[in-house]
Structures are given as structure tokens and as C-alpha cells.
Image (cartoon, rainbow, N blue to C red; front, top):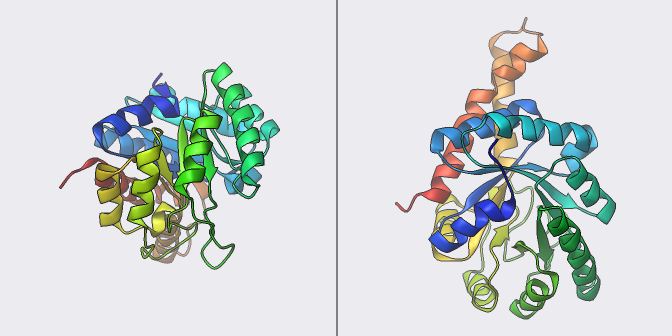
Length: 277
């Protein structure tokens, strides 16, 4: 088994200057494609179960699915709960084999966010599981506005919660289809200078590819969450498959056709975060 914690894969990235892809999973086909991509690139991968995924598939099933893929993989695979909103949800993930939980208290006042994140980090660490927290608030494209992360708050948050990774808001937004997010590099550097924890960019699909690579190799950003970019590949592949054969109706036959395009997109994402050229 090559099941790994978030710390297992982010600490080497933090020390050596690269980033690991946190790929948002919605089903079996994409999870399998993401692991295949990581194996072909000989890189670690973080399989992420976000709120949308969990609303469709229960956590016990997702935990088993992620661990099953990890058992057969030749590279480290992290089973990660993305945007857990309660301690009970994080506990359920831990009880069902997840090796990393992200608690999102970013909508709460700073003191409350620290208190709750610290409690979940303690719970996770007792179980040998990693914990990611978020300070500031990463908004949504055409939705909730972001609240940018201040270096002062980030320093306090990192020190008081004992988290293993810290998601920050520096111009990145969720669900952005165009790669046009303007990252505040000065803000990243200020946060980097006063903390010693791996940093995470949520909404990574909207960050230009060259910017991702620069941040991965020149800052403490060690994890990019990518979902929308992969879902767009899935949708395009699905439409193409159905348009090619209007008589095709078998679910397995249809969904299998999405795996190779997803694998190639995931390979490009992973390679970009690892390469220095």
C-alpha cells in the first residue's frame, strides 16, 4: 500500500521546492485516471473528496475507493477530505480511512476559526492523520467574494492551530474556468516569510499555468487544488463520445472513454508543478 498522509507528501515538496496536485474527485473513473496520471509522472497525488462529491457518494464508499486505489499504486496517494465544515464530518472521514482532512472555518471570525481548527488538528494527529486549515476566505467565481489573507492572521493561525498545511486567499477563487486569476505575489511572500507551514492554493484551475509553476518553485506553496479544469475535460470528452455514436447507451462504455483524456490533463497538471523548465 502506498497510502500517505498530507504531511508525507508536502514536507518533501516544501523542502525541495515543488508542489503536489490536489485533484478533486467526483467518481471512480476520474479517481482512477488521476492515480494513473501520477504513476506515469512518478509523482505523489492527493485525491480530494469535496462537498459536491460527498453529497453524491457517502464518505465510507469514498474512503474505501481511495484506499483501494492506493493499495495498487506505486506512488504515494493521499486520501483527503476537502472543505470539511464540522468536527463530526472530519471525524467520520478519519474513521473511514482518510489520511488527511481539511477543515474550513474560513467564514468564521478568526478566534473561532483558530479554536475549531486546533481541535480538529488535535483529533487528526491523534489518529495519525494530517490536517489542513484555511485562513482568509477563498471566494467563488461569480459568487461569494474573497477575503484576502493577512500575514499577521496567517502567522497566528499557523502557530496556534498546529496544522500541517494552510490554505490562503491571495487572488485565487473557486470554480474559475478561465486561467486569469491574478495572484498577489507580495502577499504570498509576506505570508511565507512569517510562517513555516506548507501553503495551499484553492481554486487552482483559475491560476495561469506559468504562475502555478513559478509559485511551486519559488514560494512555500506546495499544493494546488484543481477541480474545474478536470471537470471541463470530463464534460468535453463525454459530449464528444456521445456525439460520435448516437446509439451508445452503456454507462460503463461511455464513462471509460473519459479516462484517457482525464489522465492526460492530470499528467499535464502534475508535470507542470514538478518541472523547473
